[in-house]
Image (tube, rainbow, N blue to C red; front, side):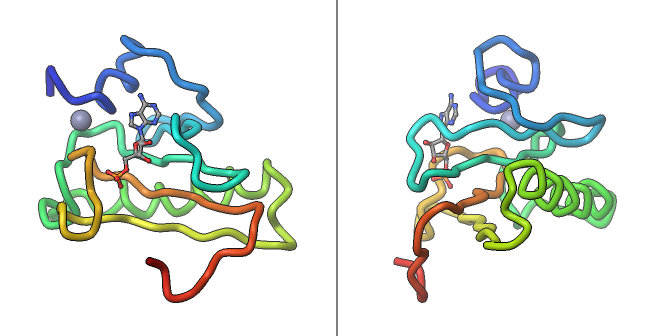
Length: 114
Ligand code: AMP
Ligand code: ZN
């Protein structure tokens, strides 16, 4: 996707503070952090929303979860834990239409989320 901001990060056309990368996944710090730790995990493949996933994407999505745990371990969150959030469509607050998970940690996280 030519104009997708997250595809541009995948292609290294715009800068990002990358904290993890493998063949399927890239993770980088959110530009407007909502917590002391706020990392975005995205598939390298452009998928607009969770509704657009197909069974072919199952491995990629599993790898996003594995990457989240690895990022959390690297950041020393293995005792305190973290939250993984995906907003799907505007009604849930999705602004960037390339599937991503927010990894949040480092402060008290209220439940239910707003
Ligand atoms: P969402 O509202 O779930 O679509 O989340 C999109 C997230 O992307 C927001 O938390 C933004 O702060 C973040 N974001 C947008 N552009 C960038 C960028 N260039 N680098 C890092 N994070 C970004
Ligand atoms: Zn994209």
